[in-house]
Image (tube, rainbow over all chains, first blue to last red; front, side, top):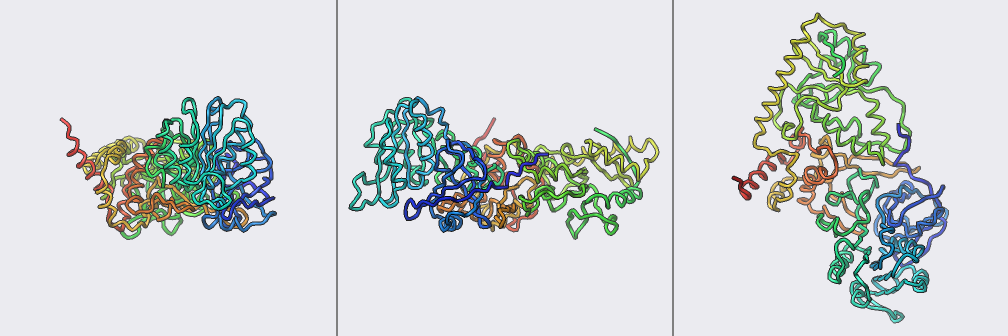
Length: 273
Length: 344
């Protein structure tokens, strides 16, 4: 009989808490043994005795001894996680699902559209792409946030801007006096950036409404259904394709996703809800 | 087919009493107008019901308990015998096995219970109001997932083995009760076949207006909004349809201190089933939740699994406090569809 218990989490020590914005924090964890994941896959993070929630790591998939999870304060579990201090022991199950098909992206031009905390999985992807930059044509990263204070990963943005082949554009809905970049919704950036839709892919991650309009804009820009990749947010609970909470039409988002090509899911019901 | 055996009812009662202490032995007994599985001992051996559909509790509950800690070690325990599983429930094990014995993520609790249980199926010798197994391609007698088939004819019990586990139990049964004279076997088994044909014919006839549930997905896919609003109007989201369904197995994971997790049976009919922390809730509206169960069973699961997700037990209709009949709904859908897309 199989002796591996799929429900038992791996213990991980919280070693650092980084305040990214008033509502978003990153939690750096050291798992009790090396932990591998592919960029875009997600984990179930357990707060002992309280609950479990799905997150896509925001750290590089090439690093095995530390894992970073960026979490927005949004519900019961995340509010409690936000109160944690380093030293806490947490639990990790996974990794689960299908991540970004990075191998298929190689040799192509990549447009990445991120919104709010949707930057988290994209940062992991960007780390991965950076490691493969010799095999890429160009990476254009467009990021939108509510206001300058909610723009996360400030130091990383500076680093990204200095990398050859990588371009970064940011926008906020409501600027303050210090903001020198774009103002408006993230889709607006697509009118400003120069992209070649031939032999290229677009990746979108953010709140559902941003993804909905992001996809619409990408299709108008000339990308086809098969060139657009989305990371879907549903109520993934078991991560194993059994509990049923993340069903999106014929798919279990936890097992068949969370990364989908738009043509795979465009006819499923309620994908933006 | 494996071994065959026939013993008298009086001997069979002795056999049960001999077996009961060494196993957790469950069989259906009568309660008012219904029946359900009970742990069998000397106090209720005479109350066991034979060949009458169907226990109120679906068979799944033996393998996926309503609530279970899934992070503790599996305790060593007595082998379980479940007597009286109807064919609809046995057929339902196909999709549960596909989900829980999945090669990537085998559920060790489900697997342990499946391995540790001997199932004796019953032929159904009568038909209840909402039985419709034949519309799902399931016959009213066990054809899969059983270790034995047990049939009572008059004062005799006919037993057939269908697996190594079943044959091993048969050997024990032989030890405790001898076989009657030759000849009874042949006549008895011929009669069993006659009853099978007759019950199947009754079911097919009774449900002749129902569509074939194995291919009713497109029918549901083409359906308009009105019928779901109408049928959902008396639904109170109690989830009894899913709880009593032999294939519905959605669950919730509840956290306990010590990184323990408790799996609890859940249902897509409960509010908040798909709600995420950000507030989005695809099944927030009751008619959407109500329709979701039909989409899941007849449209999506068939695309995902080899096995059917409805085996026609009819419990969802039996248990519905809103008096919603899935069969009426499907019949109406098929009728509307015929009007919309006339053929010939």
